[in-house]
Image (cartoon, rainbow, N blue to C red; front, top):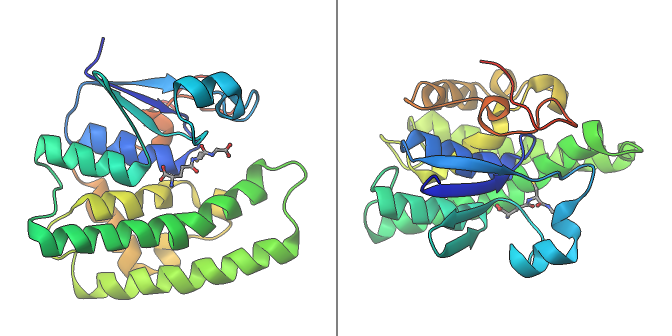
Length: 220
Ligand SMILES: N[C@@H](CCC(=O)N[C@@H](CS)C(=O)NCC(=O)O)C(=O)O
């Protein structure tokens, strides 16, 4: 058995943060596929009792430890590997600040927006989508401005804050209905830098469940 098991599915940007980190640090890990769309395993009682009371993925298992919330998982993996680790209290707090901003304001809006556009049946109400898109644009502009000042969120080197915030943005532009890298050039350049890191892989190549309804992976 691998050192780490990650409960995940290909379409989840929250899971991809953890999967990408595991790959970037060269961890020995394996995915445990969650049939999120068809069965909604995560909403059922056994999952909530045995895996995660919050009814969410990602869940990282490491020996006797079970961790949830991608920000917690990233923090744990950085601490244990020494990689992408914020250095000192100021950087730790700064990384946490961006991780929370991402969870609430970037991925927090982009996730439901993408879900309502391409997965929900029926698709989301246009007024709701328009509201979400307005918030997304405002928040991506904040990230773009930050990245005009330095190559990575905390400065000259990538940390878990970058992995958290970048992950969701690698899903295909057609799933969002707009091209984030083109609309926000400093974000586009940063996504290119992150993508060049050894171990980077696209979410559909790294986690099972692609195409939808299968437990497959996209071929590289
Ligand atoms: N803040 C959490 C969010 C996790 C989350 O919302 N995961 C989604 C999948 S992308 C989920 O499991 N949702 C449960 C549901 O909709 O039933 C994190 O960063 O891990």
